[in-house]
Length: 394
Image (cartoon, rainbow, N blue to C red; front, side, top):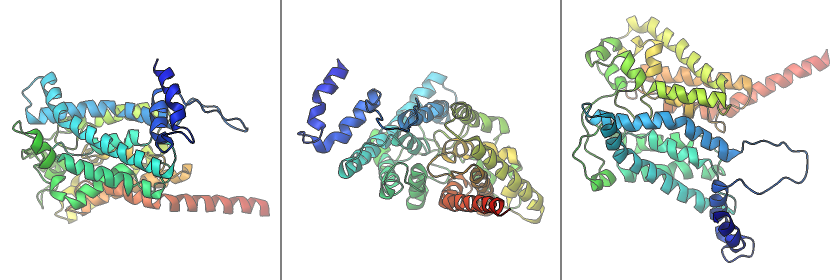
């Protein structure tokens, strides 16, 4: 019945139809519900069951463990004495409005640009909309989510031409906008957990009331002259609870275990590239071992953090799995992927350990690597051309 109804109204949206300008909106609904009916008539072409929509949906599926745990953890940080169901319900009340605002505002931006440019609605926002939402702290005011989403979609993607043309990850652009425009709403102690005394109006305009609960990275960088491990131990942040994710933080970034489950799914389905994941970890490992060696010559506590602590703290695992592997903004050559990933891992530790004003690092590291990805590919390709010319000369 639904298929017949869509076919009946299609002429209204086709060329010279009454609602011709709204065709992108009809096409988005039709292709979201059903397989597109377009076929390739001229060869050569490749038949494949994977298109952009399916790829994006698989990424969202991979995020489900991190999202579900993140919803639970938001409630758990409010009151750890409650049951799992109670914490999940409480977390849902805070997280789902953020997701709804991100998808609604971002979707409207996508449709608007599709109508203006007269092209199909890009399915890339299926992932971008979710990433923007779950990388926000639970206490973020909803109007800031809306503004950040508009900035991320328009400035981070649409001005470059839309999905496939952007040079920066739109979700990270949205987060960077919040960080630099409203730093007190995404940094400090009070934004990561919330108490039980909030109103819907407060959520939208002011953000829910915060409870002082610093993230492990904030704790580890809080006092000069002491080891980060000692500071974490004093705050009862163990390696175990940081790995499982029972810590304050952005909604879906706290659980390394959940992120690893998503990584396995993306690698098995070949949606994400293993070279990038491996090289990010190697870059982090290499740099953190160096900072450990020079820690005795400095009073900076972050220099003492060993590699496995960097791995489970902050948004490293989430950025590694869902941000660094984004296919449009990463390097495209196989050899370039190694350099690109290593640069991200290297910069993450450098920013965390050297810059006391910003103890996270993974967001800026990925955005910086996004900017250099085309240059990395250029040099890889030029080196290959030079090598092949040398073979011809011989």
